[in-house]
Structures are given as C-alpha cells and as structure tokens.
Image (cartoon, rainbow, N blue to C red; front, side, top):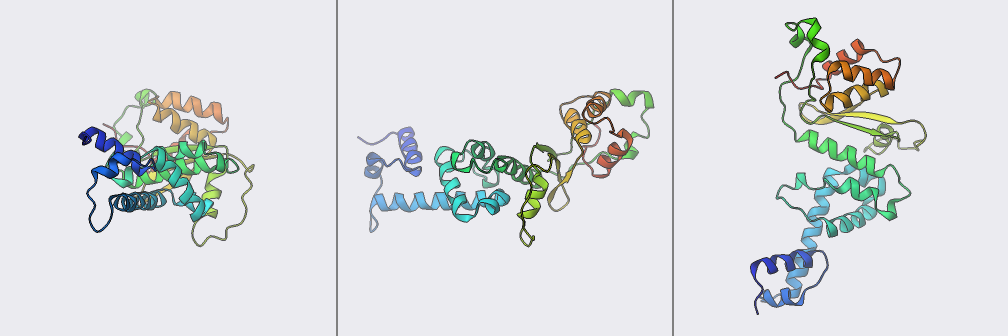
Length: 255
C-alpha cells in the first residue's frame, strides 16, 4: 500500500538521519541508480550541506575542535535537529545547547559558550542596520525624566557572559593568530556583540557595564540599570560607561 504524503515525509526525514526505511525505498522509483543508492546519495548531500552551513556559522567552534571532530559533532546534531526553515544562515540555534550536553566534548567546558558567541555574531551580521541612539538625542529631554527612561539594545546586539575568557579563546583560534594556551582561570568574560556596518564584532565590558546592559535589555529604566551596575561593581562610572556605549552605537534610537 503506498505511503500517504504525511507518512512519506516522515519516512524521508527519518531516513535522512540514518533510520533506513524499506517502505520508503519501495516508494522511490529506481532507474540506472537503485532507489536505496539514490536515498544514500541524498542523505550524504544533506549532511555535507548542513555541515558546511554549520562550519560557516560556528567557525570558532570548528577551529577549536578540528575538522574531524567537528564533522562528528555535526552528524550527531543533525541527527536530532534537522532544519525547520529554508534559510541555512538561520540553522543552528540549538547547537550551543547541544554542545553543552555533548559528552565527548566534556573536556572543553567553554565550548558551549564559544558556540553562543559564534551564534550571536552570526545573528548580528544578519541584523538590520537601524537608527542608533546618540548623545545628541537626549538634548531635548528634561534631565528629571532621564532616570525613568529605558533604552533598547540595537538590532543584533547581544550580551554574552561566561566564566571563561572567551575573548582570549576566540582570539587564539583566529586564522593567523600566534595560538598558544589560554588560562581558563584567568577571569570571566562579558562580551557585547554588535552589528557593524559591514560585519559583526564584539567588545569586552566590565562587570558593571555588563550588569547595566543586561538590565536595559530586560526593559529596566536607566536608574534601575545603574543600580544593578553599582551592585556588580562599586567602581562603576555611569557617565563614562554610558558615553562609551553610546559611542559604540549599542542602543536603538528612541521611539
């Protein structure tokens, strides 16, 4: 009995991730190439295509683990998480969480956070270049209103915090770098990923700046965000840090 369309789609998806289905093979028309061989070629093409896409999205992860281990990672991830949309640049949102639970990578405890950084850089690169908040935008606002105001992060801006020195790990893994070892106990990292005119990039923040940005990202007012920053770092300088963030164009223009 022929498979119904829904059953055919489910069988095809299962076959792609190595669950061979005799009923699917029977439903595929063979020619000079047998049906099973056709499906095998397609399965190989899917894994190769998705592996190439993930390597482009997570280049730092790939550089850290090497091409062979990354291929193993990809096969395991694809086997449990096929794409649900047609744009491959949007594929891989669950990859950092997958890395966190991937037993063969347990000796690389920072790998999931590096995956989060790679993913954030990918999202920022594809974010729109909207208008950004500048110091001049505050010129017509009464000073007494400022503490109660809230500002939103610019499109693509994401705060990544980790107990590991992600900025140093990232730098050591870049093509042309001197490499070397990174002391994983050398301090936490707070990185603000930003959309740049032709690329995406990140800057390092202090603990106070990170708390300030995190509060603003949660919709808190400038006053509440400043309080969180002072709690994280008693030496936080609100004027200097806010001016720096404005200079980085970290915030979206006021609505």
